[in-house]
Image (cartoon, rainbow, N blue to C red; front, top):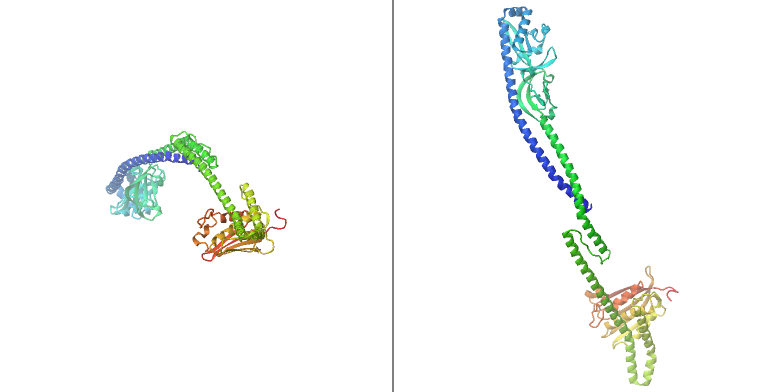
Length: 568
């Protein structure tokens, strides 16, 4: 993800969080305050409704007592009860219901047969055990369902067994719940009835009150407990809890308004954050991208680049510091290049000095030999000159070739076809006049050993190795030079071996002997083995050194064999 994208997303999050938190806080406070007001109002209303239920039960009890008095004091009614028929009983019950303002009044005999009923006069003579069972609750009010002329209705009823003129009868009075004011009025308010044991168990809405399904009510208040006949088709009457439930349309509308306002605010915050984020990200990221582009060009080696002004004080300061750092880098590179040039010239001078000294050693040995012969007489001088003139010429030729090679100011490294045995033999002969007590013994063999290396470079390698051996045994010892075939592996070739019986190389410095300018001798240059390894590796060869303190040193060089016709 790019810096600009992260900046836009960060701005979006920063803008949304305050809006969302503020919207949720306002919404929560508004809903809580309105809910508390509704709870207080509905608590008062539920108290009044509970009182209404109590007074309704008492009123029905009074009406039931009045009905008993009417039955006991009316002679025609008593006569009708004795004969179990007659219009006087039906008229008396109808007048009572009309005068008392009740929808239902009735009289049944002790077997449950209807003798008179105000709501259905034609029911006289029909046996109704369910209606008669209302008298089994000692006059307590019972909620039940009765069939009225218009429709079935839920009513609150009371019944009692009375003795009128020595005859046991059952008196019933009842009224619809809305007519008694037992069902709350108003939008979103309902009376809920639930089986004993808690809200939600076999719960139903009582009456015609408006309201949403029970799960959507905002709150409820407990009213009380009544007996309910026929609850969930149960036999007899069961205790049922009554609750006042409400759903406030104002609260629902307020929540919807809050939600719409919150969504709108979030949408506007998103749009504003995206716009501002893009603008700010461009203003912030464009200067950074320009700095990054300049840094990429510097990384690719264009050190002449300069970090320009980016349009901001902080970024301009960064560009100023980067320019200063870049200037110091350019200055440092120039100094390093100058130091490399000086080091290269110094190394070249040391190599020239080392190689020239190696070439002068045989000449010095020959001149020492000729000097000794001159002191012995003309005859000895002539013999010595004749014996050593070849070595002298070969050494002078080597120095001339060495000068030609350095003229190119580069490692020669040509893979020419050269006889390793012949070069080894000439180096051994050149070192015959070694210091007193030092012997250089050659074992090159008789057959040519053609290798892939030019003669001058090969002579430099052998001279360096033999010269190191002679210096190692200067106090007295033997340096052995050998050449042999090495046909093992994938690279057939010849192996040059130079071994001495000197003091050896300490283990602590043995791994550094091939480093340029590293030496353990006071007057050494530290270039002999380094030059030898470079020349050998230039033609694909290998060089290895083995040494033990007190047992001497052995250097072996592997050079690839040259086929017939290779080189010149």
